[in-house]
Image (cartoon, rainbow, N blue to C red; front, side, top):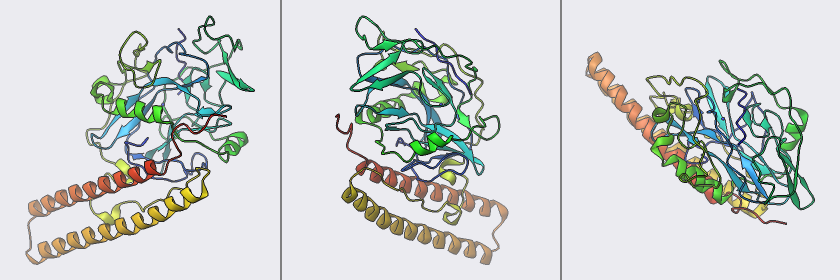
Length: 365
């Protein structure tokens, strides 16, 4: 078994917002989730055996669940490439404007920027050295990939040197990795992309529903760190974490979710940031834009309505000369109302994003 070399790791069941991050890179149809405290360090684990020809390793990462205000581990797994010649660019967390932002992974002909994070197994911060396509076949680098040569014969050996071991799982910010995208990674961001395939979506959904994978439960050392096949969290082919990458000490107040987790009133929430679709189908992209514009207008109306309601309550408290205790109770209720509205809106955006995502798996050439 090959061990992970960690350098410094919704998706949709997360708060989904689209943006381009100033401290990272420009990329089409990226996903943003903003959290007020950073993800745990990457756990140390071993890579399960590759299940068959054409499978690409997708490293594990920490995702965020807004419903429980907690990170959870999405185990690394082998995924069948959606198209011949396509490689996986892993998701990553980055720091910007006082919070950690999540950037979703994607499939494409070249590996783009993934924050300089060392996920191991060929993803050592830049590009991918775990294998390469040669015509219609994927050749595996046995130096960094766990492949049974009796079943898979298209292999080669290329030793990778000077790998610095670290466990930090995010780019930028306090203690983060200070890396910016290279020109070839910026070019890769402009390639045609395919989002997570159906097997990956099912995989992270299973991870999200598993309480043992929550950071508050495993403290950065998940019992299922990697799997041979997506969604299979039991059996001999499951690899547990050997150790946590570092101490996990989340703040007692886990606010700061979605860029507005500390917001008390709707006017303090971030503006609706629209996604630029890139499915390769102009008609599909146009329908998505129309639905997105309609949703943005409706959500803005709901924000204004709640803001007006809360301002009216403030005026009433002022007329009644309410004491500080009553004012504090009202503010707490306002914050709860605002966060509930934010969660409702982000879930609606998530559903729209999923509806107009590229067809699962695409077509193999």
